[in-house]
Length: 460
Image (cartoon, rainbow, N blue to C red; front, side, top):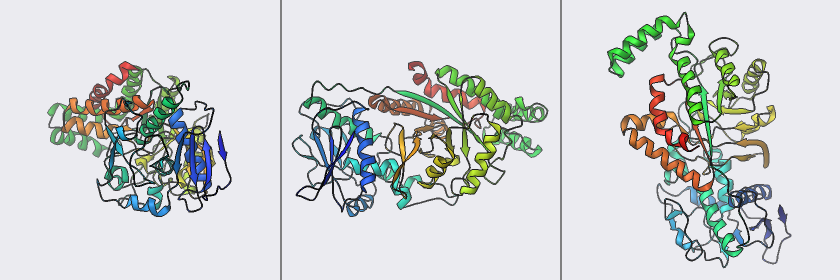
């Protein structure tokens, strides 16, 4: 429960949630609503909804807008990392694969904490900034296709995008509470696996020219006469039987893959009209209709894959939504933006208005890691309206393209090791590993992807 207090003699108006106190003041970067939202989210990361009885034990002092802007102006790889031994109770260690973490949004010059005063980092502001994607709203940097320039992001520039940073700092705070109050029993969150699939295309061979392209791809790019001949044979036969098309066969492989993982998947289907970047397939006709029916029949979730145009234009967003709703008897509660072209807070607001309950667009196209610096689902916040939204964001952590690239360039062992490192970090904080596998990777690529992830499937 969150409590508010009137202004004290020093001009602070404290907010309290669980064992955390936030010393808010009128010059603070966060609004009161933003501070309430972030403090509650931070407490959830620390305690996982475990109740707290007694006075708050850890204080955070609010930083100003100028301090925030100064942090984001830091040159690449210039953010200080601090030894965890300087922030943990004496003799206590965290079971992490690092001895240091980035000192994000310092409120004091001293970068250590011994439990006898204010925590020197404004983790409340950090929680707000990372979860809401404030920097993408304030400093939008996009490619020619209006896709996020991921290399420009603060976490990528400062080399901590592969860490669930908010979750890990939450563990630091938790250790102080456990030491100070030995009877306080934390309800540790369980590791979860979410397998998701974007159905960007339903057919590889749409026109005769695609058969020629398939042959050329097999012979010149994959350097395999067998693959070239196979593409030629498959291309001719798929015109009369869509079930022979590589993308439909890949979809079948994904259904089998979910069985191996022992988890229900989420399949995102598009409702966009045909464009340069959108296939424009019909959901009411095969092969798309066969795909989503099979997914539902086998107990999987079906969601909406939002076009790039719909992410920005409310009219297009509504048109696509209505097109999707005409097909599915139950309104899709799950969404993901094509190319991850989410733009906050407009995208979240659109989705809330039409009734979507969960979005999973905040991930990377070019990297593995944590775009929101957390592995845990969280309620969205509208930066422009200054209010919490009724939609949950499920962070995307790993998508297939990055793993396939590592598999080809660095080898299967390196690719599998990368997956294992990320998985282990999420396990330590009790988060959710959300992965994305497209059906538009041909069937022969599904096996190496499974090889990279099979340890995850075996443990869960």
